[in-house]
Image (cartoon, rainbow, N blue to C red; front, top):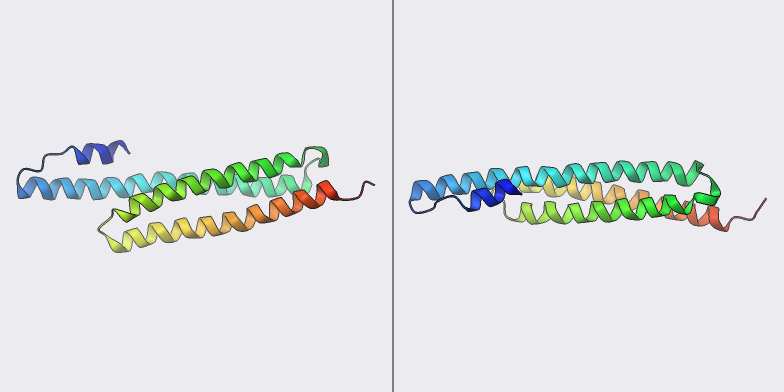
Length: 130
């Protein structure tokens, strides 16, 4: 986000300065969107690991898989908001659309995995002892 702030501080007294400022701002917004997208990808990986833990982990610690899934989903959702706010300021519609689409795809996959983890954890916690 530092590059966005720096672009906003650029001079804008002349048409040339305004154009350069706008170009720098647009490039900075794309860059600022890539960081939370990477965060979303990493959170999705944590969700995948939580799914393994929910399935194969020790039943006495299986609630930790649920906590991991909930935490990863929260991080992913927060990062999705960062992508959305940056994409909303982009003038390049195809780039904004690409960013939104990837964030949407990652969010949908995360919701699916989280739901599976929580269901599996609930079943394992409530399974008859034996």
